[in-house]
Amino acid sequence: MTESDAPANTRRMHEVSPETVDLVDLVLEYSRRRILSTDTPLDGPVAEAELARLVGRTVVDEGIGAARALQLFEDVLAPACITTDHPQYLSFIPTAPTKAATAFDLVVSASAVYGGSWLEGSGAVFAENQVLSWLAGEFGLPDTAGGVFVQGGTLGNLSALVAAREAARTRCEEAGEVPPARWRIVCSAEAHSSIASAARVMDVEVVPVPVGDSGMLTGADVRGALEEHGSSVFAVVATAGSTNFGIVDDVASLATLKAEFDFWLHVDGAYGLAGMLSPLARARFAGVEQADSVIVDPHKWLFAPFDACALIYRDPAAGRRAHTQHAEYLDTLTETSEWSPSDYAAHLTRRARGLPFWFSLATYGAQAYRDAIGASLQLAHDIAREIDTREGLRLVREPQLSVVVFERDGWSRADYAEWSARLLAEQRAFVTPSSHQGRPNTRFAILNPMTTFEQLVGILDTM
Ligand SMILES: *Cc1c(COP(=O)(O)O)cnc(C)c1O
Image 1 (cartoon, rainbow, N blue to C red):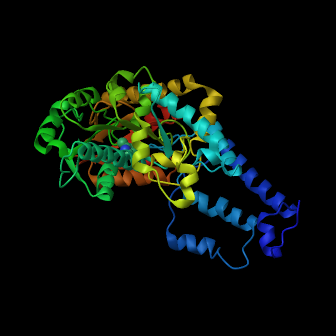
Image 2: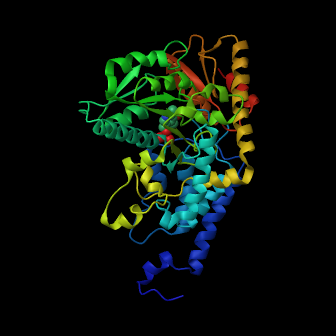
C-alpha cells in the first residue's frame, strides 16, 4: 500500500493502523453485545440540561477519542433513546428488526455501496429488486412492476403522488386540454398525515372524504368528490392499514371507479400492507392488485431496521418520467436503459437500504415472514377477546390487523397520561395515550414476534 501524503492527524482517520484496528474492534464488540442482548431496557428520554451535564462537549478540535465517545454513547446517549425493538414497546408503530437484518445493516455500511445507480451499485440493486419483485407479486401486481427503497413512507407517498401528477399532466397535455387551476388528491379523512404533507410540498389540494362507522373508505364515499372535482383529481389514496386503528380501506370498490374516472390509485400501506402476506388477513386487501403504486415500510411490519420504505409502481416508466434528474455530470447514467434507483423517487444519492431486508428474507425465507405476521394478527385478536371479558375495559373498534384500541371507563386524558408515564418510569412498557373523535383511549400496536399474551395481560392488570 502507498503512503498517504496527508498530515498525520488526517491519515489516522483512514489508514489501517493498530489504533484503527482497536477502534473497529471496540465498535463491533459493542454492536455484537447490543444485537445479542436479551435484556436491553426500554430506557427513556432525558432532559437536555441533564444530557449536557453528563456528556459535556464532545466536538472539539483535538477529538475525545473513540473509547471515550463510545463510552458516552453506551452509558448516557443510548439509554436516553427508547428501545424501539423492545417487546413491550407498543406505541405508535414499533419496529422489530430480525437479527439477520440488523447484523447485515453493519455490512451495508462497511461495504461503501452507492445505491443510486446501476453503474455503481448493480449487485446491490439487483438484490433489492428481487425483493421489490417478490413484494409486487405478493400484492398481485404484474411482473413488470418495480420501484425503489426510499427513506420512509412519507417520502414514498410523496414520490408516488409526484409521479401520479406527472402522469395526469402528460395526459392533459396530450389531449390538448387546459390543465386544472388546482390539482387535487382524494383520500379518507383518516388518511395518514404524510398525505397532507405531500400535498403541501406539491402545492396541491387534499379533498378529505369522511368515512362511515367502519372507518373504511369505499368507492361510494369517493364518487361524490370525483363527480364534483372532475379531472382535477389526479390521485385517489387508499390506506391499507391506518396507523391509528389498522383499518384497511375498501380498495376493490375504489379501483372499480377507475372505469369511469381517470385517476391514479395509490395504496398507502406503510404499516398494514405487510398484513397481505398472511392468509389470515389477505382477503381484506382485495383490489390492491389494481393499484398504480403502493408503499410498504419494511421498518414497520417487515422486520427491517430503520429506515426503509418499498415504493412500487405498476408502470415503473411513470416513476422514471417524473423523477429522473438531468445534469451534465449525470448524463452517463441517465442516457442508459439500466435500472437506476435514483430515477424512481425524489432523491439522488442513496444507501442501499433494502439490503438488510433482502439478507434477512434470503436467510429465513418468506414463510417465516408470513408466520411472524400471522402471529401478530393472532395475538391482537387474543388480547381483544381478553379486553372484552374485562370489567371497565372496552374495545373502541374490533381490530382488523394488529392494532388494538381500547378505553378504560371513566379515565380522562390525564389518567391515561399518568398511567403511561408510570409504565415507562417502571420500565414495564411503552404505551402512549391516544384518542378517537375527541375521546381519550390507548392502543397496543403489536408487531414484535417477541411480545407475549402474558406481557399484554400484565399491562391490562395495571389499569
Ligand atoms: C408510518 C406511516 C406513514 C409514514 O411513514 P414513515 O416511514 O414514518 O415516513 C405513512 N402512512 C401510514 C399509513 C403509516 O402508518
